[in-house]
Amino acid sequence: MTTHAHTLTDKVQYKGQTYYFCNREEAAAFNENQERYLIAQDPTCGRKVSKAETKFFHDQRVKYVKPTGETQENVKRFFFCSAAHRDQFARQPGKYLPPEFKLP
Image 1 (tube, rainbow, N blue to C red):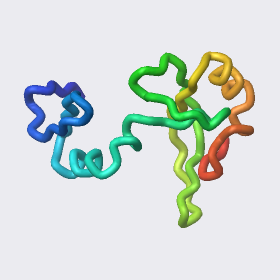
Image 2 (cartoon, helix red, strand yellow):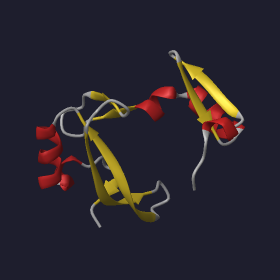
Image 3 (cartoon, rainbow, N blue to C red):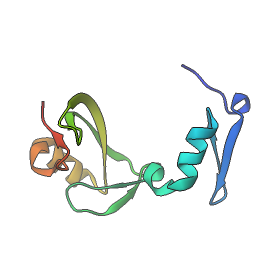
C-alpha cells in the first residue's frame, strides 16, 4: 500500500517534525508514547537508539509469546548502536532476545 502525506488526515507535531497517521487511533497512540515509536533499545548493550537515525539494524524471525501463552511467528526489526553490536546479535540472536521472544 502506498500512502501520501497529503492524503492523510491525522497528523501530530513532535519536536519540530510532522508525523502523519492513517487514523485518529494511531495518532492518539503516538501522542501517548512517542518514544515507543521513535526509540529502540540495543539488545546487546541496552543503549537507547533512534530508529530514524541509526544505520544498524537486523531483521530476525522470532516467535512472540503472548501473555496468554499463545505464540505468533513474525519478523522483528532490532536496532543497534554500532555495526559490531549488530553483527554480535546476528551471530547469537538467542542470547540477546528479550524474554517474550524465542527463536522459531
